[in-house]
Image 1 (cartoon, rainbow, N blue to C red):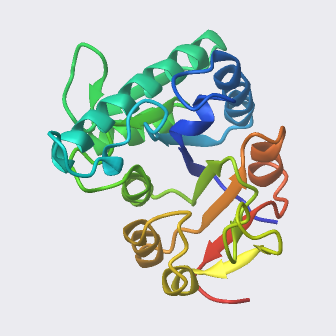
Image 2: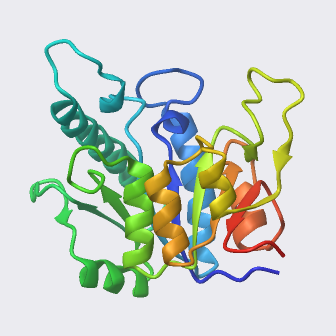
Length: 240
C-alpha cells in the first residue's frame, strides 16, 4: 500500500468548469473541495497547482495580433482566478488555505517563497500555487512538476476528466486500453499527451511518481491517497 505524506495535486482548469467548456461551475468546485478537505482532515499535507484552460489557454493562440508569450501571461492570470475560487470554497469548509503566485500581486496572494510554502504545509494549511512558473512557454503541468520537486512531494497526482493514461486516444479509438502502470521513459517515447515532456522529465529526474486519475468520480482522491488503492495510472521510474 502506497503511503503519502505530502502531495502535489494538479487540477486542470477544465474540471472546474463542470459540464461547461468555459468559466467556473461552483457546484463542481464545491464537490472537489469537499474531497480535498477530507484529505486534509486525515493529516495529508496538500499543495495544488491549477490550470486556466477554462478561462484562457495561451498555447491555443496561433498567429493573429496576440503573440504566444502575451497569451501565456493571460493564461497565468486565469490560473489566479481559479486559485482564488478554490481558496474561497476551501476556507468556507474550514480548511486554512494560502495562495502563492509566481507573478507578484500582493493584494490578492502571497508571492511564491519556497520556505514559506513549506511552513504552511507543516502547519496543516493547503497551499495553492498560481500563475504557473511565472514565465511563458511553460505549461501548468511543468509548473506542477517543478513545485512538486521544490516542496519534496511524495507524488504528483494529476486529477483530470479521464480515468488514466491510454495507449491511444480513447475518444477516437474505442479499442484503446488504459495503462495501469508505465515508466517515465515509456511515456516520453510514446509522446503521451496527458502531460508534456518537460513535466515527465522533471518528475523522472526527481523520482516523483505521477498518478493520473479521474477526479470526477467520487472518492478517487480518498481511494488513492488514504486507502492506497490502485486507481488510474501510475507513472514511475522502472517496471516492477
